[in-house]
Length: 186
Image (cartoon, rainbow, N blue to C red; front, top):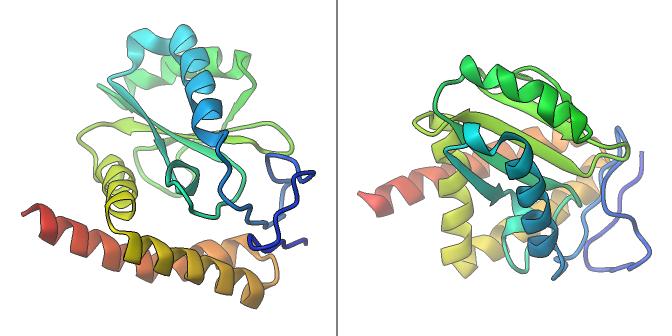
């Protein structure tokens, strides 16, 4: 397994990650444009089923080091009816992964190396709220955003490329941020 520190930018590193690889890239100015292009492509295929579509995850936060994979949240009116989106997304190169551990979320990946993740669920779901709230809170609080960036870098060093352990180790921080964000909203 490979790992790469975000403080040593290498413009030759590809966008995307191979299976089992863990690497953080420094923030890249082209990420919003890559998202917008993919959003247009997705909307052309399944736009009539989309209630909302948003760029989420660390690539959506200016200045944040991130795994070089775009995370896209798609809100649909009805989780079960959204299964009609599987075939059109497959035609765009997405692989349907089922709920992949999160109930009532359709999860898709694109490419090998993987370049995109789609998290599809109902706009009223807790999962949708968490994705948007976490992103928005980090965008609005530079101190917390910087703290998250430091945590990610430290975990990359400590966990030597173990993506599963890396994701799990961020869980407590994410829960704390969501709790603060909900308290701020109230």
